[in-house]
Amino acid sequence: MKKNQKRIAILTGGGDCPGINAVIRAVVKKAINEKGMEVIGIEDAYHGIIHNQYRKLTYDDVSGILTLGGTILGTSKTANPYHYAIKKGGKIEFQDRSNIVLKNIKRLDLSCLVCIGGDGTLGIAYRLFEDGVPIVGLPKTIDNDLRGTDITFGFDSAVSIATEGIDRIHTTAQSHHRVMIVEVMGHRAGWVALYSGVAGGGDIILIPEIPYDINIIAEKVKERNKRGRRFSIVVVAEGARPKGGDMVIQRIVRESSDPIRLGGIGFVLGKQIEKITGLETRTVVMGHLLRGGTPTPFDRILATGLGAKAVDMIEEKEFGYMVGVRGNSFVKVPLSDVAKGPKAVPLDHPMVKAARSLGTSFGD
Ligand code: F6P
Image (cartoon, rainbow, N blue to C red):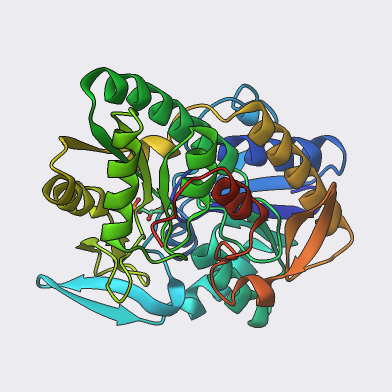
């Protein structure tokens, strides 16, 4: 490192999504090109700091990655230094390894650690900030469930992929006179289901924020049939649940500090709808397809703007914040707000109201 040169590091944590490489590119290019900083890429989220796995990122390293899906740095959903999983003889033990992280960051002499992630990664970032690490966060998730920002990058791409899926399902549903259920990710929030459901013209949209009644869903399907619409499309968020009931858990990842993985509600619904209505029903789970591939132009633009703003904040020593979007502006969101937990779809969200006014059912 040259004398007086600032060194920053970047890591990507949590589930990957389209647009991560675009944001890495923006941070690295601007930090090198405009600010003359040195940039280090940490591998596999906080694991990389604990195990000293990192590499220098040059301007050329990030050339050509704008359109690339995934993350060139690797990621992890199990790397919480404050609750770090250690496998011992087939058993998992949790230890606090944050002192190693703090020591390694100090040794690297970082002016800033840029953490790109969702509420899990940025919650850890907030704890590190409280422990004295200069941090700037960037809002990444297909789920769009981060507080303090209108939108996260990755969301638009996921909605676009889900919508294409729903469009394709539409034609086969129509041809076979079937009920087709499309299950989409979103964790405990219904943003992806709501937006793709509206964009794809779903007849029934089920989100975690609005618990459903299976009989109301069946009635809607039957009523459509009576009107000669002999098919129906149900878009269901993986976290949707019946009134008074629970979400469907697909697996428990014990080494993760948020161990519950959702999925499978589409199959449960499919059986119930078929039984009550007597209509042939099929289920498609879009799952991780929503996280892969190239980002939409919107996400590329968003990621580029967010990454550039992050470098300005580093220069101004504005630490302990995530870069968020409000209206047409990039804003500083305290990490303490982001760490408060996920942002649900408000029940009076304009898109919920608009869909209802058109006759779309939310199963309630
Ligand atoms: O947070 C992103 C997300 O894709 C959620 O929508 C989903 O519930 C979860 O990650 C899936 O996690 P995993 O990659 O561990 O299967």
